[in-house]
Image (cartoon, rainbow, N blue to C red; front, side, top):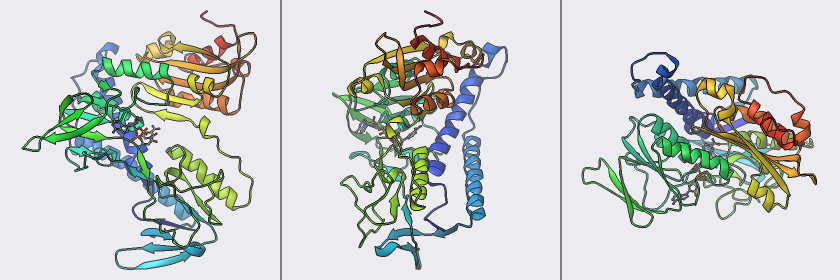
Length: 438
Ligand code: NAI
């Protein structure tokens, strides 16, 4: 078994994605908590940020996880070939290095080269005034004022992190809502929280360009209908594009669409026999856990097993801004658009004992279920959460949606007390027609 890797193992998730981003968001969480410690009777000085320590801690977490991966690969006797891989006919993989190259032939090949940040004209990335997530995650010092272009998952996570750490943040989003695709009621909670914390969100606004001041210390971003913003940093988070340019593929039947995604069937098979493609390289949700599931699908298919297909409509999503957002399955709108008669219920964390204890009560849990003739809920179609620790609470909601459980199935179970997850239990219970709080 061989793995061709041009840098260190771990990919975007470990080096320039999920792990460093969530590590910095945890720093923001600690800062926020210490800032209000006196509410709990814990007297402290106002917290000061030592960014050097923050960056070192982030790198330590990455290094430990990389070492863990290397250990796993060694234990499974996987040979790592350092270099840039390209695929040719008959499953011949060429590993290109600065001074030489090597060819490998395999009975099965999985393409998993991931994605790269998209950029937009007028905002060339210079690593100083204009950055993508790649650069921001290793920034030397935080700016005083930042404009985040794109209010998707990356945009809201960075906006939240920087704002908690004292940066004046503005988000400029082209669509009418940030986190497009999330349930509207959940997004409203997030938008309100952002506003309360001083994050300005401009929606339905397209950016035109930016003009650095002569000293190159800051820049003016122009957007919308004659608006402008003076900032010290522009973060471009407008999506990611598949990294398929250097795959070679000459002499193979592997198809690549006009956006650069490698084309696959529902078992991640390309058109070339015994060649699969997974992860951000194909047009499925760009999430590490989806790539992981696709990897298992491709491997089990290559072993002639009968893997279950993945249902991307029911993928779990977790976004680690404050308050957190997590969901699986249909939104109310998408369930109606899919032809379901729906009934919904929502409960707020303000009613949760645990949320009050923690002192973090902004948020709600919304459950979307198929409507029974008597008006009660049937099958659970989607669960959307915003609030404290919801990324850790999504698990049972994800299982309910994917097990096609009904409201009655789930309402029969006990939720431990006091936990945040009581809000999910209560919301499901209310759809049975026997709600706790009327
Ligand atoms: P995204 O596709 O989630 O969001 C990009 C946003 O930028 C969209 O709302 C889009 O309307 C907006 N946009 C595009 N062009 C624009 C323009 N010119 N001006 C203003 N707004 C513009 O992409 P993002 O946030 O860059 O993330 C990339 C991928 O990584 C996504 O698939 C995302 O889901 C995934 N990701 C997931 C995370 C999570 O699940 N916690 C965290 C970070 C990334």
